[in-house]
Image (cartoon, rainbow, N blue to C red; front, top):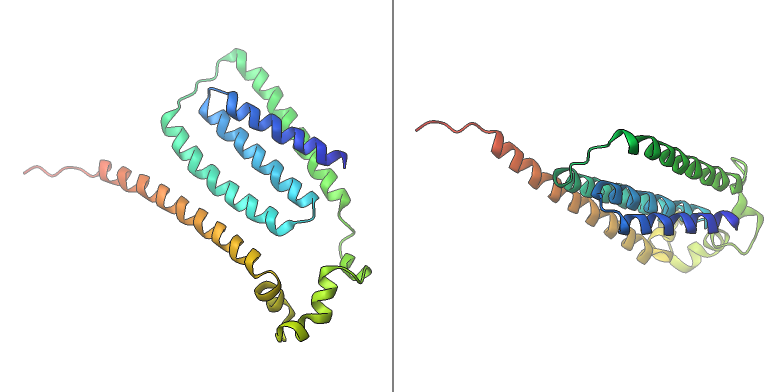
Length: 187
């Protein structure tokens, strides 16, 4: 439970830095760190499907934000700030590494069927009652389309929307770049 509170503190600190910093690229990086912390929390809470969705949306969101930020914010690092930034970066990477180790320590041994040990888990209910309640011979399809249909629909909608948004934003910028590079023919 300690790692849970450490990750929450990390997320709060990253969000405060993102709000308070004047450098746009630093704010985007802190938003990315915050999203990574949230995905680690989902893994810690044993929700890997939501963690994967969080990572995909976070990566696409960071692509959009970095693309928009780099064109607007030119930051130059002076020699005095470089040492401090390096120390802070190493500390943040070390904390994320320790959080990742802690999450992987809580996972069972590879190949251990954790859900088969307890008869009252959702997976055992799906296997026992899936055919009778849904009529689907394929248990995986019955889980995805009957038991968790709204969850699957929501995740697919979030992923589809983020991919379409990233495509629209990145494509518009690419068209402008191509149009500005075309030579104008003399009339």
